Image 1 (tube, rainbow, N blue to C red):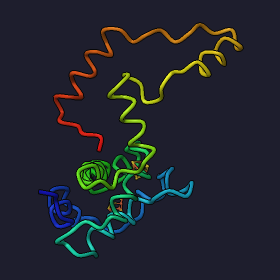
Image 2 (cartoon, rainbow, N blue to C red):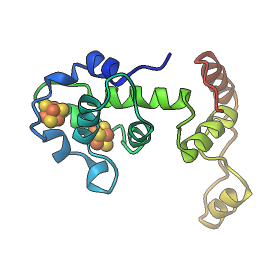
Image 3 (spheres, helix red, strand yellow):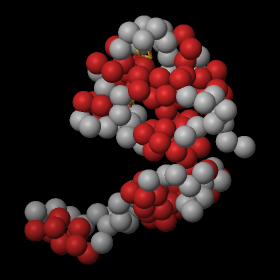
Length: 154
Ligand code: SF4
Ligand code: SF4
């Protein structure tokens, strides 16, 4: 069952936020047109506690997972953890943005988030770089790990 906004608020103690804005002041995502952490926290605390909106789930994917907000927070709130938990839910509910879905499918299939094709190798050759080597055993191990997580890219 998906978590609710109330679950996220409770699990990450978000009600202890004092609204100081320090998280927003260090956030590279918000500064570049993405999402500010305090907007997410406010949406969780001020919205319907019995659900998580799809807007909130989509906003969670605009975060860069850099943890700067958490490091700046005087209340030691794991803001990034709360945002990550919203992402988990969005995967379950099919709200994961397409570009992340594509990258995760490539990771599960090839061990790389971005497929290496002839065009990539040609560009590397033009730059005097070697072809990217096959991932070999490490890719097989990664596939096993991904399959054990229960990840489904659908
Ligand atoms: S972890 Fe996300 S919300 Fe926090 S500062 Fe980085 S980009 Fe912003
Ligand atoms: S830095 Fe912490 S206490 Fe301040 S607004 Fe952000 S989450 Fe709330």
